[in-house]
Image (cartoon, rainbow, N blue to C red; front, side):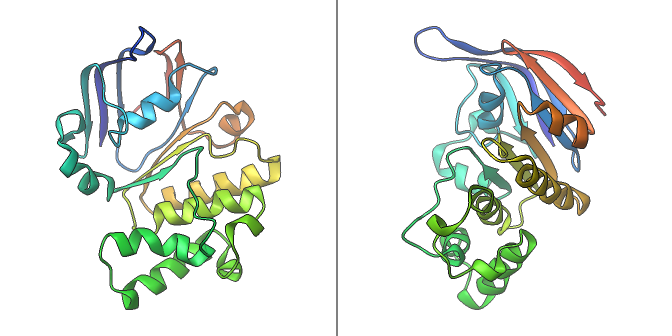
Length: 222
């Protein structure tokens, strides 16, 4: 479903984030990408929705070479991706419910169809009772769960999360990972980048470890 073939990423000024990375994530997998700060985890994830483009090599997602896609095609690619990045980009002038409704409105869903989907997503992450609250009224863990609800409301086949438990206490982090596991159990491919080794040991079925932009370990590869 996701494959990296000899992928390198160099930034202007000479910084190299990835070096000749070859890796495949199969449909329905739950995989963790780990490694030290600056190992290339975030860059790897951003190549999948073409937020970043590889300098060389190919990134294939659901049969599409994402590096070759034109800008106009990117929204269609991203409709099948749920993205949870460290910068959550929550809308603090709108309610929890409206934050989750937004992706459905952008993609043209009628309100009659969108409303139950938004509430189902909020219920899945335990926030249905807070649907009328403003995001600023939520705890850090609740804000992260809101970001997840917004990411999955469009029912993506792939869920990508970059350090989703950063700055959360152990209990909140466990709740977030339990949500990811529940999505994986219904067939969603889940790829999580984290430096939290305790969570990796507890939840990981497959671990992709990066070191200085190179693949250092791939345990449990299919």
